[in-house]
Image 1: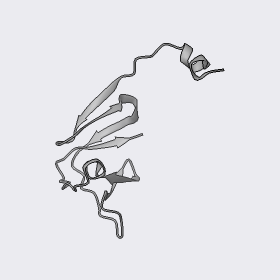
Image 2 (image 1 turned 90 degrees about the horizontal axis):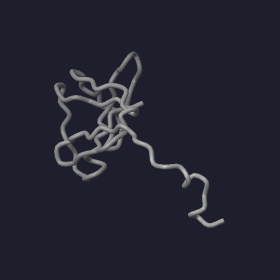
Image 3 (image 1 turned 45 degrees about the vertical axis):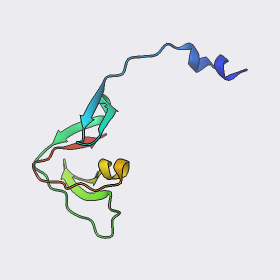
Length: 91
């Protein structure tokens, strides 16, 4: 059986709702169902000995959730996180 004869290729493409998130210098597209909530008013608590892309953590719905700097991972330059900046919580 060749690659083109694979049963998964028989299905037609499906539509998937996505959101484009503007991060300033870059835009990221993510499936809408992967976003749990967008929160504001939370400043991440720094973590000791964390890599530079790991900004810290927030308490969201009584859980500690890591906050990563997607711009630093993509562009290799850190950004500043402020309390009024929205944070996206992913599922």
